[in-house]
Length: 426
Image 1 (cartoon, rainbow, N blue to C red):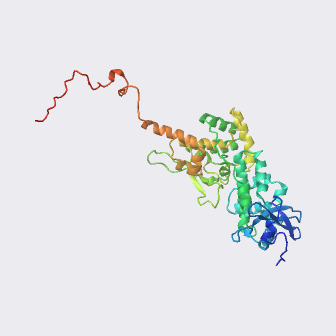
Image 2: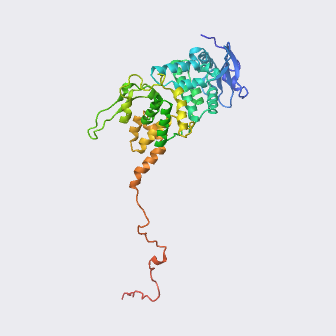
Image 3: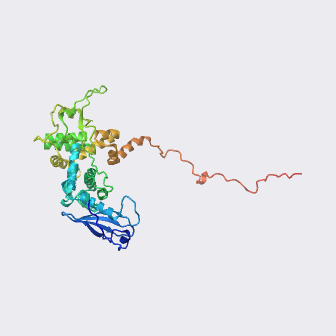
């Protein structure tokens, strides 16, 4: 057990209250490279720990001093503050497994175990500075993380900043779940707070003709890329889902007894977005019979590049941009996700129930309502219009009593009206 250090300035309440009020803490050394500080304020002072060892130099709050109150979760005596400072210092010792970079490694492994998407982790790691990546999770401060977030905001859209921060926050929470030395999550709760109003939808919706022109441009690149883009437009699936399709996922379907037509579909793999393990691994998505015929019978990965490799952002983004330019559209605005947004809106405007649209596109009703509310409003307008009350001009106008010709006849009180004869008794 570490020996408790004594300090005539800090160990008693009366001694602390005689100190001058100032922002800079009064420090006392309690171990090598470890100091306990007391910040004197107008009310109860606060304890802080400062670590200056092993190439580290950081300060973190410990708790409130027992200047006026003696009990409370964060109200500490001088001896209790020393103990808490030592625990925080141990948690803040930077070595491989407890650094921010180590936390991202563990989070990425956790996502892979759950078959979840690891792209956001890679994005967060890409934007981390070397200094922040090597810092211990327990030593992080609100200013560390808020400064990092604000720097991201200078280069990225607010929504992208929030997605990147969410990935880092999840990694730090996982680290705190598995390391009892990390006693507080306040640093990333406050420092990585989402930028407000960043989720405003800027979805690009294309006309049917524009979609067809883009598909034609994709086929001019190669038959393999044309198939990839065509299936993206038909199903509205994410590119990552399309890349995981297998030949057996295409089903020619059975004949509908009412229409005598076949009902082909593709069993679309669920996305890897969101927390937890996906319970439903595939969802049936209808496709035209002409599309099904071209894909039925294939073995292995359904959509491959001409060299046999699989599709990912690094090899389809440039090709799609060229197809968009060939359609006289702006590739900086129209990405392959425009095909997904267009598919969702096309179904909404065709009166397909929102819950069905959400299921076919592997998302939630809440996300549909959040990101496509404008189009839902347009849809609602079309449904509600037949029920409007008609108040056209040919309806007879209600009389206006302010009109002189319609003024009611006033009560006559002229002098020539014979008054009632009053009978006088006896």
